Image 1 (cartoon, rainbow, N blue to C red):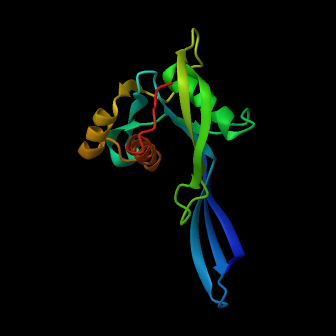
Image 2 (image 1 turned 45 degrees about the horizontal axis):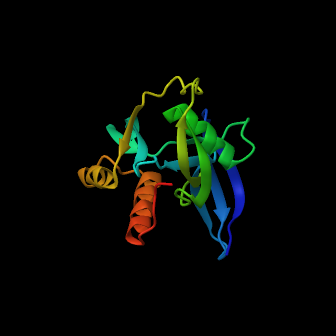
Length: 185
């Protein structure tokens, strides 16, 4: 198994992505094209409130021309030494909260057929408001909403929860409920 890169060409380099065309030699010796999106790593948070709800951010997503409810998330930047630092920063930027408890739930490649984006998902509990939170990114326009499981599931059924990280978060929450695990601390 494996493919050896024969030729690589960067066709566009943006702020968070780089688009690369590669020719690779397959194990059988044939040459095949690969279109690759290089993407910064990211972290996402399932932030549980003390009353057992989850904080979601609603934002408009231009590629699909729709507003979605999502769990808070963001890209690692040069100041972050780890995905956990990214998660802590993003939680504060997007919700104005910090958390007393953090647990890494999973990590995965979002879609390795075309991108190398690697996402780590954390669960955060013991949320508390920050007096002067970090500022949101200039291009973010977010609406914060705490949803119960039933409300979040209804949003999923209505199509306003559709991105992979949030769907994973919702099913993680469902599994915890199905196992009778207490959410609030």
